[in-house]
Image 1 (cartoon, rainbow, N blue to C red):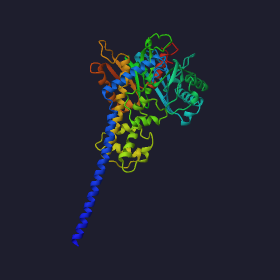
Image 2 (image 1 turned 90 degrees about the vertical axis):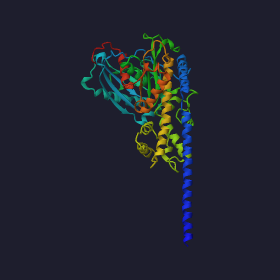
Image 3 (image 1 turned 30 degrees about the vertical axis):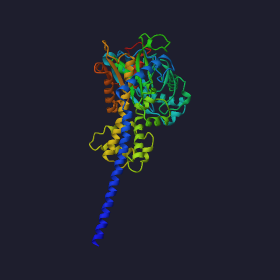
Image 4 (image 1 turned 45 degrees about the horizontal axis):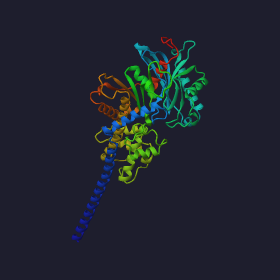
Length: 495
């Protein structure tokens, strides 16, 4: 009897041991599959130095093609009609309207010239109701003009106008526009969720000016710029060596100062300054040298604009978090990363924002507690091992590193076009003004980008190229340009 019991007990132990062995083997296979996906991802996203130089060369080639003719390149290389940037001498009261997405801001800025700089600055943000984003241009601009009128009225007696003058407004419009003068431009297409089809081909400044008139407001748009040109103006206001501006936020773009004679498609009179600001619309850059994966190709195919904005889909805040989600989903499907059941919320497109990605990536706690909290908050994944959390961080790192290195290669391409990417006896100081949430808040991304650009330039040239955070280019920059192009000469008056 005792022998039978002993045999039975031994059988139970043996069975348990066999189950444990099978579980360990299964676990080992699962992690081997996860490791294989990660390793393949790291290899395909690596963007080594030689590849980055090819991306830089391709950017240079596309820039030249876009400057030569209207349809010569994936880069629009839009002539902005901005041929004079702020000098610091500007004085007076100026307004700005910054329409860059689902929110807009209105600002007023009091300028005091070289001695006082920006004396006072006030702003207010307004959310655009979602239904207005697809209704009529009339309704959209009436809503914006009403908010502008309310903001002007809130200024009180401190903000009065001399008789015979009107308020001047710099209008930042961060959508593709065909500029026709410093204060007019037709919409090429909406992006960022807007879908008012009747607006395409219309002068957006005329639409805004008419809406302002309907409000009974004495104000006129004096400059039309996009956020990147505004960033260039804001950068130039504080540092005269600023020649390039880059936005790295929800979207991405770059603008720079070009010699007017180097723009073959420009048939107007040469500006007195000899220069012209070019809005590259570089988010649409595309090259065979960009390190694309199946995750990027699937994201692009399922996007609202397949085949377009490829560079933006690799480097911007709109998309990086979504790429991470797609990678984690494949790991969950193929290797049960989060257990036998796939978390339903992991299958929801764009549920993982780039902000969530950077918060997890920046988690410096020993147990990666923040990563666990975010996985629970976003995907309702109740519990995860440290090993799983570390893998999530590794995926974030791969995608952020690729984006940052490609952003650096793009900047290097601009410097190459300007003749500032190779060593020369007359090394000029070059300042690049950068703005946008990804640059400002994703510290790993910004540091990686700066380090990569420095490596690409080499130790002799790198010290002469400076990346500077810009101060509210899309708002302050627009007001500064309104001041630069003011129709009133009494610059010393406080109006």
